Length: 279
Image (cartoon, rainbow, N blue to C red; front, side, top):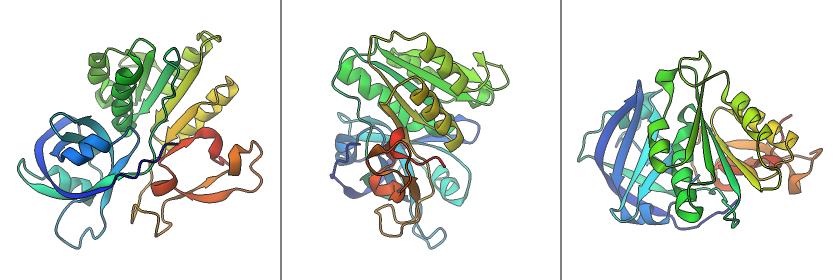
């Protein structure tokens, strides 16, 4: 995957705090350099307070950027002390941020390719940025976003995806909105109906079991341009501590007999599905 090297360390002012779903917040911040150089799939490391608890920064995917205004956004589920501290920041407060970090999605150069984006839960954060990016690079006509959640109230960014102008399909496990079932089942149906003469590229972010199934379905459908953005707790964010490793396969080997540990923060977080060992 693509790995830009432009890294910024800056105190960024919070200009907006919005609860978009129960316990899910969007924070908008100002930093022109980060907004200008960030690519979909990359993340930033945020120091959520000037304190020692939590001691370490917290990683957040870049959710959206507006290079003209010099702003970028983070989308996150409030699940612990770090996200609670960030949620409680007020407009006008600043947080120290390092980024953008890690690899980004590769959208290819084929303007006729079909792009299928699969978002589960807060995995919608980088998928939102990716959807906007593909629309700018190749147009929105060939972009379909599949959004999954347990219930309709847990769906994230569905309205934003619609506003982008892309095709949107929704799956909820309880059937309260859209297709009743898993978003991976919706993916299976969608890919089965595709035009085999057209290149198809799949991108996904969400829970690891979901992405494992996305990888399996894509391989079963002979789609090898399947990219996954992995979510994992990180300590340093720059590849020093080896705390966020995943088992990967050298040179996309199908059998993957000799896997190795890959650092998600520097080698990822975006991987081709064939790079990963799922054993």
